[in-house]
Image (tube, rainbow, N blue to C red; front, side, top):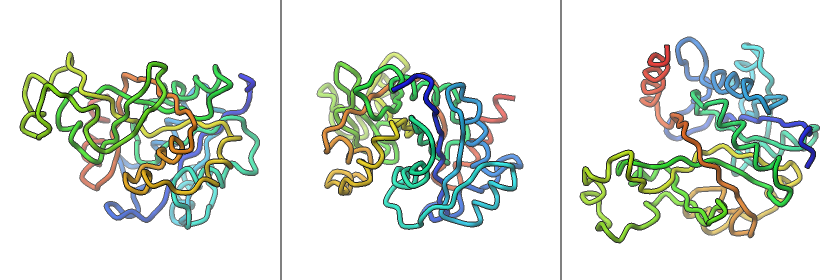
Length: 261
């Protein structure tokens, strides 16, 4: 993999969402959410081009309206990665970064961080990020994906369940809520941050893999990669972001943005 190869960032943005239809164009301080993500991706020093991949004309028009680069894709994809694979099929690039369209505060440094392993190692096809979990509420939240890694930092498993199991405490919420666990010194586990970097050559292989049993159970597409015996390199970051899953999460984002000003 040449270090000077082109790196493309793709932001999948779909309209349909059970919890928040039209989420990508939800207004945040006068801008659609997807514009915030787009602008953060543009700040990443290793990214050469940014494109938004959408299955909805309303999102497409909004992106063009703020001067962004957008591509219409099929509405029938199983996952965001399938949508990314369609976009990059005919584009010149060596590395593709899949950035979630619902994290308007994603640090541009995290985007560079996820790319670096693929520039350094020829044997890797996929890399992603994780951050330490210090509190019981995140550990028990099924909306938060947890990950465990081996000694080389490669993923062993991703799950919505609290993992690893700590034998010092009962596997019940009351115990995980113990105040001595809720501290910066105590790391309960690691939260997966859903940004991926892929070698472009890997994506055709991914979309030809069948949806796996574990993926179908957990609703986590990265398990398809593990079940097909590919390595996923995890890189720890210290910078968290706020994902928007529901309309009420917009207020959390605005509060965080106002806190930075």
